[in-house]
Image (tube, rainbow, N blue to C red; front, side, top):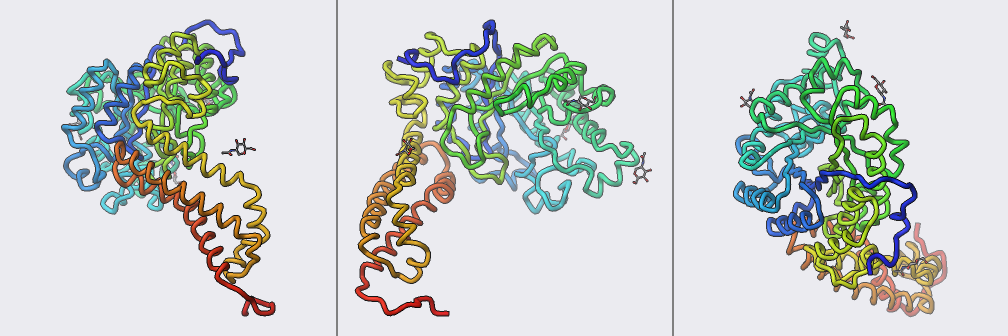
Amino acid sequence: MLLQRTIFVLALTVNVALCGYQRSIVHFDMKGAPPKVAYFKQLLSTVSGLGATGVLLEWEDMFPYQGDLARIINKNAYTEDEVISILDHAQQLGLEVIPLVQTLAHMEWILKNEEYAVLREDERYPMVACIGDPQSLELILDSVNQLMRVHSKFNTNYIHIGADEAFQVGICEADRLILPIKYENNTLRMIFDHLKKVSINVTEEFPATKILMWYDELKSAPLELIKEYSLDDLVIPVVWKYTSNLDNDLPPEMWKNMSYSFKEVWGGSAFKGADGASRYWNRLKPYILNNKEWYLQNEKYKSHFTTFDSIIITGWQRYDHFASLCELWPTSMVSLALNLIVLTKFHIDTASAEQVIQALNCPPSTTLDQLVAGSDRCRYPGYRARDAIRDYVQLKTFFENSTWVHNRENGWLQSSHMRLAASNPYYIDAIGKAYERTLKKLDTVSSNLRTAYTEIFYPDVIEEFMTDYVNPFYDDLQKRKEAVQTIDTKRSYGPRPWFRL
Ligand SMILES: *[C@@H]1O[C@H](CO)[C@@H](O)[C@H](O)[C@H]1NC(C)=O
Ligand SMILES: *[C@@H]1O[C@H](CO)[C@@H](O)[C@H](O)[C@H]1NC(C)=O
Ligand SMILES: *[C@@H]1O[C@H](CO)[C@@H](O)[C@H](O)[C@H]1NC(C)=O
Ligand SMILES: *[C@@H]1O[C@H](CO)[C@@H](O)[C@H](O)[C@H]1NC(C)=O
């Protein structure tokens, strides 16, 4: 049973009173592998079954923006009817829905396009908007208002305006002109003024909606500046950190700084997509450690604030719009399930274990070890994709583990052997067989991957996944197999040297 074995990372090392977060919000990142509508709804149901209280929907280019933005949205973007049916489903499940729209940086999906390149902070990088240019504000407010127009058909207590990782500021011409005149050459003033304008617009248009933003720009800002631009009234900071040493990475002084300006603060942890930009199998452990630390941060710093009872558990699909796909939903359901428990209870008790088994549709005999290894027989949405990715990882690891093959490659199937089509068949025939066996299994796994992905993702996702993670392995094996076959057709070699210069 689930409780018979305790995974070491879950073991209690500190004696803490049971407390934890009251509000746990699960992040849906549509930057990569956005779920098809039916899968999206199934995910929402599962997320709700796992005990999350809400979802943060980062639509990015998948939102059906109209007007000018309609030119550049994803060709797979949801229709407005689809968005409404998704929101409606979430509401029926009792999930709090928080939309996220980026209003400062991580605007790659817009700024990458020729039409909007003039609005870049740094013309070389399609990341941050040139906020000194009134057209940027117009564009940003347009996107926020379009999003809110749809979301506000439902309860929308919060909107998240992003604002993390603004790596370039004060570079575009409009900024350089306005900085000395309006902002005493202080880029933070310019950022705060921008965020204030965005926040006031939202607050006036949608008075029932409070504003969340990532804490990046707030954490080291002078108190007076936060106050001068009324950000202490206008926004709630979301402190995010995905590491496993939060005492070090979120120093007490940072929390003090936050508490001087803000009565309320939220946390931001991760259950996937924060363990390497190209990791496609969820290792679980770093996320468990991270969320465990977040539980303890709450214990430590709760008293600094009137309200610190909410956390967003992020699940990145890519690090940014251009980055490769990382752990996708199917491989991360167990991570989500266990980390939600960690955030609310710190350790896994019988009741929560049973809730996981039920919500993930697992056989009652499922053990924690099986869940962690991905060898369970749970039937949650997307489980076929999880199975296929797991089989791929195992096959690849098995091959990489086959030391005898690699020893022979090192001796008799280097690049020169393949280029010259010359080697000793006595040593390479057996590894040729190993290539063939692996390729045959790989065909089956690839076909399973395709079928499973097609059910839940749009067609480009499988192409990208295969191109980055499967094909290089496949192609290398194929090339080696062919080299062995070619060598096997040869009966004799002339005298060395074989390289013709
Ligand atoms: C907020 O921004 C939208 C979009 O630019 C605009 O139509 C609206 O008038 C603004 N609202 C306020 C109160 O400024
Ligand atoms: C801002 O920078 C410009 C150029 O470096 C300088 O001439 C100006 O005096 C500065 N203004 C303020 C208010 O510091
Ligand atoms: C706290 O705020 C001050 C400015 O008021 C800043 O200098 C300092 O770096 C901040 N500390 C942390 C840990 O962010
Ligand atoms: C690969 O080798 C490691 C270390 O010896 C082992 O733990 C692991 O089970 C092996 N994996 C496979 C798929 O053979």
